[in-house]
Amino acid sequence: MPTDYIEFTQNNYYAQIKSSGNSIITVFAEVKEQNGTILQGQDVTYSIDPPYSGVSINSSSGVVTIAPTTIAGTAIITASYGNLATAYAPLTLSDYTYTVYLEPEGTDFAVGSNFLVNVMIVGGTNYSQVSANITYDSSLLGYVGYTYLHGWAASAIATTPGTLIVNSVPSSNIVIGGSCSPATRIATLEFTVLNNLAGGSEPTSLGFSSLNVMQPGGVPGVMLAEGKPVTITLYE
Image 1 (cartoon, one colour):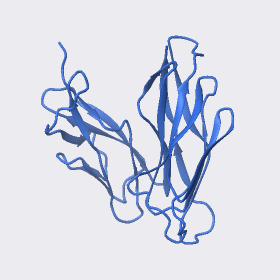
Image 2 (tube, rainbow, N blue to C red; image 1 turned 135 degrees about the vertical axis):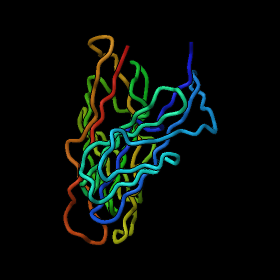
Image 3 (spheres, one colour; image 1 turned 120 degrees about the vertical axis):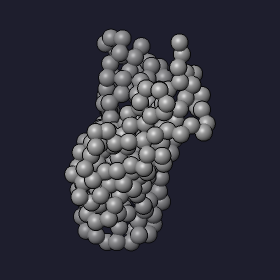
Image 4 (cartoon, rainbow, N blue to C red; image 1 turned 30 degrees about the horizontal axis):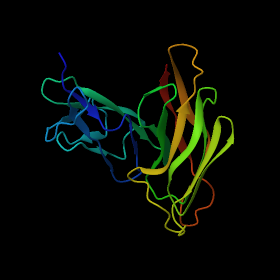
C-alpha cells in the first residue's frame, strides 16, 4: 500500500568548524505523499544519531550547532515523523578554512536527460576568489553550459574533454570579499547523460583536480581548501 515518506531537501550538508565560536547551519526535511506532493504543516523531529561530540541539533527547528572543539568527520542527521521510515542525511564537518562541494539536483539520471549541479562554497570567513578545476568522465557526461554564475566577475569554461574551470570573484571590493557562511552557490552547471553505458546502470563521479580559494583583505597567497566530489548513478 502506498505510504507517505520523509525526505531531506538536500542530499548532503556541509559545515565549517571555526577556530573560535560556534558554527550554525539549518537542515530541513519534508513529509511527502507517495507521489511527491509535500504535506504542509507536519512537525518533523530531528536528531544526531549516533551522537557526535561537539554537534547538537534543535529537535524541532533543525538548527545545528557545531562547537569549535568538534573533530572533523561526518555526523548523521535523522528526521522522523510518526511511524514513517526515518530519513538520514550526512553532515560533513571540515576544519579547512573553506570547503567547495558539488550538489547535483538528484542522485540518478537517465540516458538522454540533462541535469544541474550546483558548485557551492562554505567557510568560516569571507572569500575574495575561487578557482576550481572540475573533472568528470566525458565518455558518460557531456557539459552543456552554465545556468548561473555568482559574483562581480565569474566564468565557467570547458578546457579539455572532462575538465572545466569555474572562477568566481564575489565582489569588486577585495578587502571585504563575499560571505560563504552559510554556504553560497557560485555556479550552476548543466550536464547531459550520453548513451555510452556499459550496462543497465553505472556510477560516475564529478570532482576536483585543483582548487584555489583566496581570502579578502589583501591576505597573501591561497588558503588551504577542501574539494568534495560527488558520485551519481546513470541508467538506461
